[in-house]
Structure formats: structure tokens, C-alpha cells
Length: 265
Image 1 (cartoon, rainbow, N blue to C red):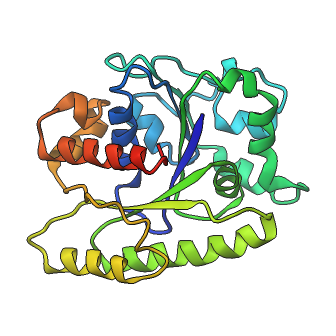
Image 2: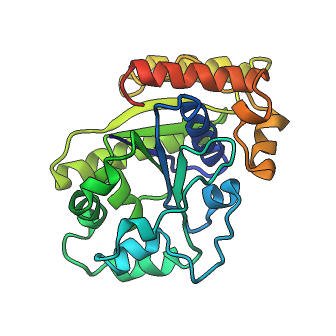
């Protein structure tokens, strides 16, 4: 089982859309069984799948932190995408922000999620990939996710703010891992919403390739910006299902192939 989280410290980079679409491309291989986990109280990944995150009766990622004994099967929405029945999800909930505040005073708070997955490893071992979406911060819930996963994938768009967001994330996480006693697990950086007609786009690639902390993790294929990618949220279908021959779908499949070759996926 590989565990992966998508992260950023800048909103609007298309992180959730990238997460959703890469997971969809990964699920094209029927040998893969994917568990998506939405760690964002804005519930964007949950909404992309087509699940109502305002349902207060549905178990979600918040339940893990508040009821450590819950059976994991009670958290899962199975077969969340009809066309890709090998994709399940643990949804989020808008009250996750309340959980964030409650965790601040708990001892060992950064390891609660890892402990839960460890205690229920027999159940979670059915999945080849567990993929987390997060929101742009390094709060306690995100620290739990980033501590647990094998690999963090940063997502940048074509902007100077995105560069600063990636640099700040890298800097702050390196400080965190010293305290947590783990190795740096930032394994990939994807450029999203790429438009080669914009001068800054090529400059951005060159900048990341020139920086020691990013040059070895930059994914070779950028994902082009397109209306079709934005439509995936409305259709609740990844681009590889919605428009499999679209240039963005081709790019997404290439990114997945590269991440598989790097053993991130």
C-alpha cells in the first residue's frame, strides 16, 4: 500500500482537481484499488466525487479523530465513481475545522491518524493506494496526514505566489520533520494550469530545475490549464473518463506513468 498526500500553501493552484484526476487515471488499471481521503474542511474532493459533505449523519475523516475505535468499514463510501468502481472515499465534513481546534491540546496529536491506520492495517491493506487531499496550511489535521504518508506531492500553478508557496511549504515541513523524527517525504512537484504561451510558464520550469530542493522532484510533464479539467468537478468524473483524448487527459496519464516509475504511485 502506497500512501500519498497532495499539498500546497497557496490556494487556487488546482491541487484538488489534480488529486482527483490523477487518482482517476491511476484507477484505469483494474489491479489498483484506490482509497481517497478528503482532509479539507472545504470538502472540495468530496464534492468532486459527488457526495454531500453537509450530511452530518455521514461518517467522515473527522470521525477518526473523535472515535478511534470506529470500524474503518463504517467510514468508507464504496464505489464512489460508477465508471471506476475500484475507487472508494472517506469524505470530509465542514466541521473538520472544529476538530482542528480540539486537537491542539492533545499529546502526540500529529500521530493520531498514523496510529489509526496502523491499528486497522488489515482492513486498509486491501488498497494499493491511499491518496489524501489537504487544504493550504500546516495545521494539526494536515500534520497528521503529512506525517503518515510515504510521499507528499506539491502542486504549483504558473505564478510567483505559487513559487513562494512551494518554497514556504518545503521550509516549514523540513522544520516539522526534525521534531517528528522522520525523513523528508516531499517526493514530487507538479506544475498545473500550464500554458506554454505565457513567458512565465517556461521561466517557472527553469526556476524549479535550478533550485536544489526542487530540481530532482519536478515532474517532467506539466498539466495544461483547460475548461475540460474544470468540468471534471461538475461532472464528478476524472478527465480520463470524461474526455480521454483531451490534451489534459494525455498529460494526466503521462504524469501518473512518471510517478509510478518513481515509485511515488
